[in-house]
Length: 253
Image (cartoon, rainbow, N blue to C red):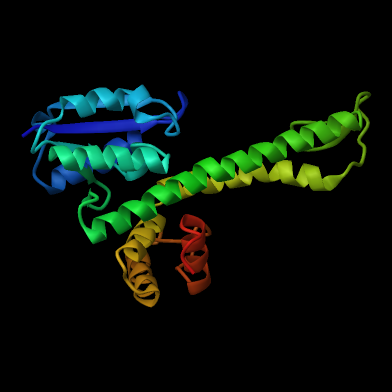
């Protein structure tokens, strides 16, 4: 039985350090070393690109019954929900295990629990990156178009100037929308990297009551306050958890 590692970054400016650390931590906990790894596949491609257009497709062809693919988290496989279902479905049919190393969870679709977890994680990945990013990009285009129509431009420090460099006023509704892009993208990155956030969403996907999730989260917060915390570095509250859930899966109340 072969063990493969798959790591993916979206851009050339990112590295695999955090993913590698997560996977190595799981290997150590399970008394495995790099010598036990059959092959490591890494690539820098957007998760919105279908898997059959990435190196992942070649890795899947290598896998046989009983093999395992180690990933740091599900979003590394991709960020398109339909594509994620195809990847997981193909692996389940062929007897290949996908293991999420950050929590040791097997990603599968042949059990009710597995389907619920896969749905929550894949839907969150697509909503957060695909839909939000598309809307904010539309906001940027609208803001730039509005500035251009009014003979103005936005400088790097965010001030609005005319063609002669004089600061001018403009319709701030468009500018404010454009200025939100960086904040939204920062929020997306935080959710991708936050162990606490992803742990909470996974517990909800498993059917655990919200009150219990909050209590356990805050117990972990006391032990690792920099890991299990909100984006503001605080313990988890009911309103924040509700917001996380609605953003990850708007179908849930």
